[in-house]
Length: 495
Image 1 (cartoon, rainbow, N blue to C red):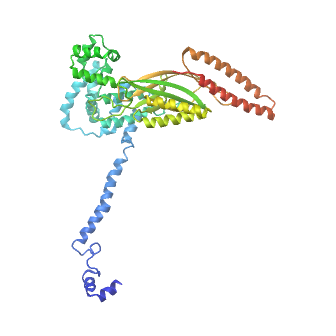
Image 2 (spheres, rainbow, N blue to C red):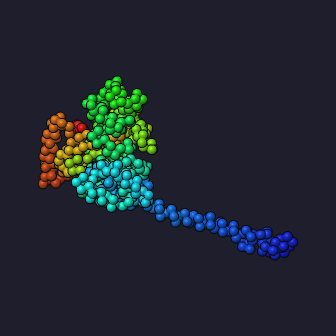
Image 3 (spheres, rainbow, N blue to C red):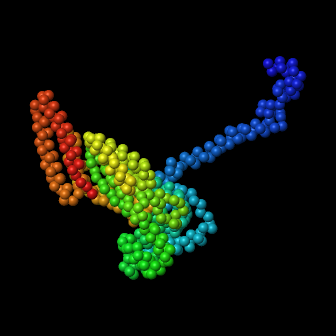
């Protein structure tokens, strides 16, 4: 068709003879043209070579990072150095070994500033004063990046956004690595305390008056001045009336009225936490923890941004609820709690309470009342935390629940909980009772008596007579025993 057109039309024939195509010059196909080759090379470079180069550069770098923008090498390093006996004061030594810090450039011009910085923060490096020369030499023999990061973080100047990302990696201390599948308590508490220090940008500034570091305009001299009036604890300052506190800060501490007002505003934001926790069993060998975490402030707010004037970013408050055995250093379960989204908390609490009541066979009216009570609690500043864990070995277990805030210093709380695991019966069920003081002791004796009676029943079921009638009775007895175990649990109380 093109050849026929080129032979019949003079213009097309001229284009065909001159450019090889009836329509004239073809820029992409005719390499003889002045601009055709350049355009073709441009398209190949922009559409093929450039994306390929970007992929070659980006993919190897992105593969180094996890979903939280923390390097895989950092996770491996923390996993190796995280030990069950790691003291909270030693978490910083693990923290600075992140691979992100190892890639930090160290220039020769940094030597003199680092020497001056070392002299300024030498007392906070936990060096042995008896062998100070050996300790100093050992410190400077470390990797240059580790030396730089260790000194910079001690003076409160660091890449805090990177620190917060790395803190998520440090929570690998909660991973189940013990023989029983539990996490480690001491490293977990150390991680949260390090997060508190990062938000408040405080590193061992007040060793004896640690909680005062959360207040603005407070220096070591201010703490010494108010100590003359026998105010040496943070709670003592909070228990004072507004007038007494203002007089103390202005007349004794030497602060201005505006500075005293700033301190008062922060005191109104500082929170207190209460935890109401209990453990029940609804399934075979599975214990369910129910915990209401309540937050109170003097200004009446539930959600607020923590006070951190030296921290360069806005940080939401997050809380961690840990159920642990402090004696064995084991974390049985951990759950993150947030007070920022009330609507989501209402939906979650309503659904959880409804499912629990339905499993217990409650009526529709009782379910509605329970759901309304849960919604009222959430609106008043409480959050429901539910979690399940495998039943431990039979016996008495002294547990402790820790509610830790990652933003405020001195606001953590802990609650003791006694958990009694009964002996497994023939039906394969257990009883789990949360005890509380002497009131629970009477209940324990009654439960032991009931369990002995139930054992007598089961002995009679497994007699030599294996007829159908005795088998039917055995099935009914199993169901009755399960109901009794559930009722025993409901009657228990807890801390």
